[in-house]
Amino acid sequence: MHTHDTLAEIQGIYGPVIVAERVLQKLWWSGEFQQGTLHTLSGKKLERRHPGRWNKQEGPDFIDARLRLDGEELQGDVEVHFYAEDWFAHGHHTAPSFDNVVLHLLLFPPRENRPLVTRSGRQPEILVLLPYLPEDIEDYANRETLLSLETRARSAWLDALLEISLADRAPFLRAKARLRWAQKVRFARQRLDRHGWGESCHQLALETLGLRRNRAPMSALAQRHALAAMKNLSPEELFAEEKPRWKLAGLRPANHPLRRLAQYQKILAQENWPEALRRWGLLLAETPLPEPPRTRHFSSALRTLSAAVLRDAVGGTRLHTLAIDAFLPLLAAQNGAEEIFARHWQHWPLGDIPARLAQDLRALLPAEENKKARVDNGLFQGLLQLGQENLG
Image (cartoon, rainbow, N blue to C red; front, top):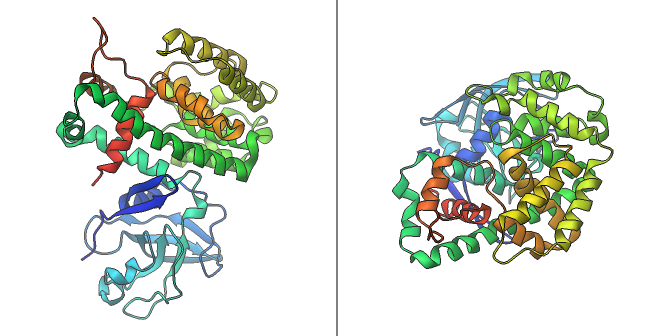
C-alpha cells in the first residue's frame, strides 16, 4: 500500500523536526528548488520539463512527468521519498504500478549502495533534492504547519495550550519559539557560509517579499541574478522571466510580485544596502530593549530600518516580516550577538499572519489590565512550533 501522508522525524542540531512527505511532493510540484544545476546520482544533467499529474491515489506520486536527461526527452512517473530504502520498505520493487517510474526523488542521499529497480527490471534515476533547496527543509515544514493551522478545526491545535494554566501559556510559547529562533539562525549561518553577507541579504529579502505564494519564483530570480546584476534589470523584465510560475489568483494588489519587484528595485538604488543593514543591526544591538518591551522602542527601530536601509520602499506588516524572517536571523548569525537579537525577535510586532490565528491566540492569553492580550512575534512563533510538533 502506498502512503502519501508519511511523516518523518528528522533529527537536527536543535532537536527533531517533523516533516510530512507531502512537503516534498509540493516541492516537486511547485519547482521551489534550484533547477538550473540538477544532476542525478549517476551524474546526468536533469531538467524538469513538467512535474506530471499529482496522484492522490495508489501508485507513484506523479504520473506522466516530462523530463530531459542529458539532453534526451524522458517521460514517466516520479516517486517521492525521504530515504532510498523507503522504495523497498513500501514494496514498490514488486508492485506493477511502479514499473513506469523513471525518477526516484529523495530528500537525503542513499545510505547504502543498493540498486534501485522496478519489478520489470527498470532502474530509475535518483535525484537527491536537499542540495538544491534554497531554504532549510525546516522552513518548508514550517509553512506547511501554518497552512495546517489555518485550515484545521480550532480544537485540533489548541488543546495543548488549554491544558496549561493561563499564567504559564506565554512562557510555554516563548520557550517553543526559542527552538524556532535557533533553527532560523542556524540556517542563516549556513547561507552566509555559502554566499557571504551581501548575497545572503539579497536572496533572503527577495524570498521574504514573495512570502508564501511567490517565494519560489522570487528565490529563482535571486539565484539567477546576483545583487549587482539585478540593479540593471527592470521589474517588468524580472517579472517576465518567471511569468509562468507566479501565483496571482486571489492576490491583493499590494502583494502583486510586480509591485514587490518594484519595491526591491527602489531598495537596490541605495549604494550597498546590505552594509546599511549591518550598521542598523549594530545600532539595534547597542540599544537596550526596555523591560517590559515597549511599542515605542520597536517603532523607532522600524522607522530607522525603513528610511536608512530600505528607502521607505516597504511598509506595514511586510516590513515586520522582513525583520522577523530575514534581517534579525542574518544579523545574529553575522554579528554573533544572538541573545540580543533573540530578545528583539521574540518581542517584535507581528508580521504577515492570518488574522484568525492572531485572534484565537489572543483569546487564550491573559489580558493586560483593561486591554486585550498583546500578541507579538515570539508568541506566534511558539504557536507555529507547537503546531509543527503536533502535525499529523
